Length: 172
Image 1 (tube, one colour):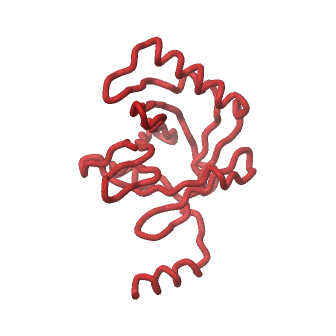
Image 2: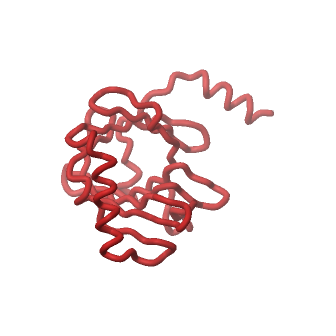
Image 3: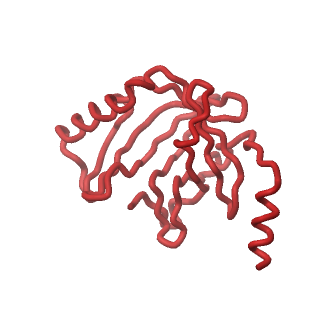
């Protein structure tokens, strides 16, 4: 009952984006998108690397449940005000690996997937993709997505900071 009341009070508070949303990554935390706390699984996991003012990320992304296909991508991002942003370009080159049911994909399968990703993202080529992180319940965040400054609520998700050594992984 107390938890429900606290949740209701928290929902009435105005939510603002976090000014340095990727700060936990500087201490080794990884971003788990659509977390399942009981199973310690995520739909995707982002690991950030900082080099001077540049931010790089590697993401493992669940592409398919059957067979379990995990895509590995790499890109660079930057801050714009309180959002973490990147430019969608050369999507094909950003795909750096893929596993199928735990085994590394063949180079032919990887090339085919690179072309598929490029085709999916072709309409966003060169567009600025930004994410703001709004605090939510239980240490989670709601990601608020915009493309070229236009909100895309259909792309919003839930994320939380976790540690890989605690057993978190990408899985259906």
